[in-house]
Amino acid sequence: MNYRQTDPLPVAAAKAGISRATAYRPLEDGRLPSQKVEPRGRRRPDPLAEIFDAEIVPLLQAAPGLRAVAIFEEMLRRHPHLSPGIRRTMERHIRTWRAHHGEDQEVIFRQTHEPGRIGLLNFTDKGDLDVAVTIAGQPLKHLLYHFRLAWSGFEHAHVILGGESYVALAEGLQNALWALGGATPASQRQPVGGIPQSRR
Image (tube, helix red, strand yellow):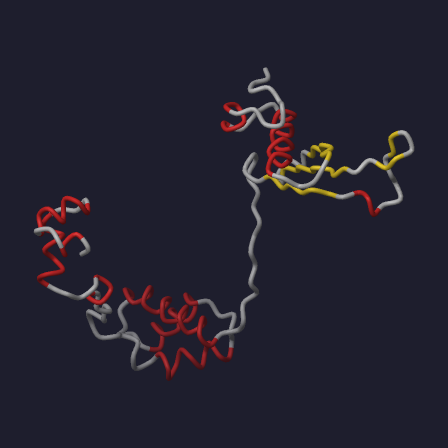
């Protein structure tokens, strides 16, 4: 639309990287694509409209653990005129009812770790511990860079002289990956902290 302020529509479309047909669409219909989408309604009458609230909901309230297939078989027994093809419709209705009115479900975020996918890293200051590193009687100010793979539990520690920095982070990561037997593509191209570009 910005290009359209100064250029003809075919030129504006070319500059925007879209086809002329796409560029003409806003002129024909000024609505946004999200405004054009109409909610999809039912294509046929609900076959469970008469019995769901009257018969199925009381069963769900009386026995929350009742399976949908058992309710379906009971409804077929009570109402022989029902088609066996409404099973999926009934399962959807029951699933929706349970989502809105059923018991609260336990929320679980499963943590599945795949090999070689997740590495955890941290800088650790050991100065608050009683164990101190001294050189010629003077305390050595340092940090430990700690790297761990989530799946295998592989750990690597690296002494950092100075504070937390991108160089210290990259150097510690590169050394940890070398200890694993590999290196990141970036570390193969650029030396970090005086470490050679490649190590075989």
